[in-house]
Amino acid sequence: METVHLKEVTSSKELLRFIKFAPALYRNNPYYVPPLHQSERYTLDRATNPIFKDAEARYFLALKGEKIVGRIAVLINWIEVKELQKKRIRFGWFDVIDDPEVSALLLNKVIEIGKAQGFDTIEGPMGFSNLDKAGMLIKGFEEPNTMITWYNAPYYAEHLKQMGFKKQAEWVEFEMKIKPFEDSPEKVKRFAELIVQRYKLKHINFKSTSEILPYVDEMFDLLQKTYDKLQTFVPVQNYQIEYYKTQFIKFVHPEFIKCIADASGKLVAFAITMPSFTAALKKANGSLYPFGFFHLMRARKNNSRASLYLIGIRPDYQNKGVTSIIFNELQKTFNKHGITEVETNPELVENGAIQRLWKNYEHREHKRRATFYKALT
Image (cartoon, rainbow, N blue to C red; front, side, top):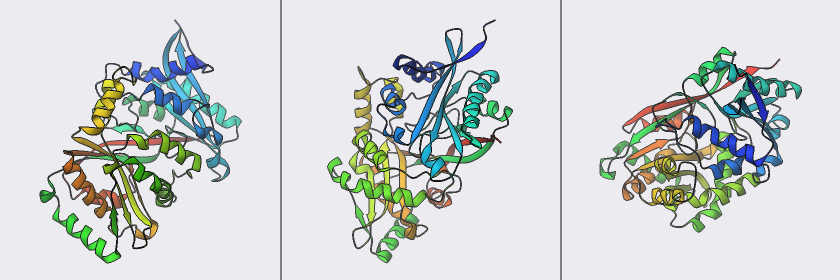
């Protein structure tokens, strides 16, 4: 009987094998939506992702003979360790067959590296920073993942619990029905108008990507201020902002970004939504060519679903109803473009303010995910 052993990824060819394992594992799963191989390589390759200025990563494959049966990324964010004084080693890109021994082999490698570094905690699954994917699916296994979330089978969490891991952070995701504007909640429309008048706020709408770019730095500044008190927060660096400008803003339909400014023109809130790329990524099957790019561009222009990706609100305007203004404006855009369903991306369960807004709409909580931790000392 062949035993399972670990092999560290040391070449470009092995990195591609690492990237392609999850799509192979879930080949027959209708709910798994593969990321683009090109995007995964860009994120994981030290030569291309600027996060490696402040982070380290090692990648391991679990092999039974020559067959891959699991993978894991061992991650260290040195800003988190040195500036925030959190001696935590992260793991991500964790995928495995339903065999607790394989999971244990992979996770014990992370634990071994963490102890050697003098760290006191292991946590995951998560990426390098707050801008990466995070959280293991614990509810909604019969729902497709989005562009910025991982999919996993139910047994993953059971494997972790058997090793003594405990739940750390938890996120919820919602799906909402979007009705015509005249049928949308009057409470939200009235409240939005009241808040605009009370605080002398104004909407900023966009028609082109070039119009968005001057606001991106200010959006990320708001993002930092919105989430800097959360347990998962790690400061976003300027080079990461530049990376996201060049890699992702081009995919965002400009009309799906909404900003709110005060009387002086300073941003008080923003939201980034996108037409859903879930179906397009499923069709692309990890590759932009020959037809993947066509599917993505088609989804950007013709779609009945949208995804709410990021929302940021200046601290002095939090809990003042600004989210109602944003969603009221998004409602108009959704109606214009034929959007009938919107999916939120992961929101920490303690983020009650935004979740109270969803109660005004026909909605369902369709997914939950969590990170898990274990003490190393």
